[in-house]
Image (cartoon, rainbow, N blue to C red; front, side, top):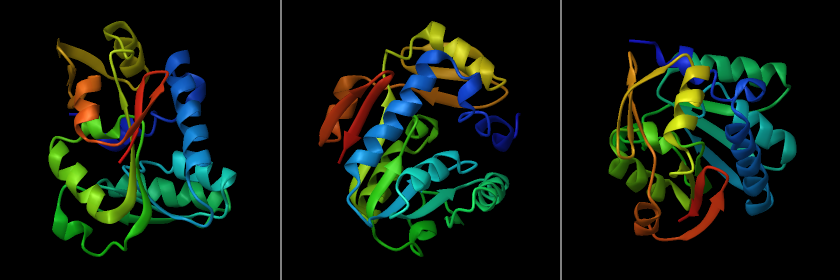
Length: 205
């Protein structure tokens, strides 16, 4: 089983990602920056090594940003990366699916769950419920069928992963975990405003 930190650190290496994944990353970043109100408090769920937090803080230095992840190794990398970028970004070890683990977090103007992070979380309902409890607005970006089987193979290969099976919208990865992509009907069932992205949807709850 591959350690999560050894995989997720590659998710934000833009120069190595397939063109469509890179375009999706940049599009999400631009959308988020325009949607967040001035001086807002922001929580990112699944911040990994902090690449997106740093990108957001560079573009929107007015924001107060906190990142959470379930992997201490990734949070350590995030803190180091933020320090190297001269950014003041807070990180905490937290599982978004466990209410008790989230109890110490304050209430935020926005909760972000980007780059199909939700598709990696087994307890999707628990994650959605807790995100709604933690913020006034929840912004979730997920992959749709625009993230084709062919593109998925290329993308996961850049992360050092191999697809073992594909069952409808579920990718099972050899020596790792499974990842989900989403139908429009599923995203619509959450309620909220939906914007199409190059690989899927950004939903504002």
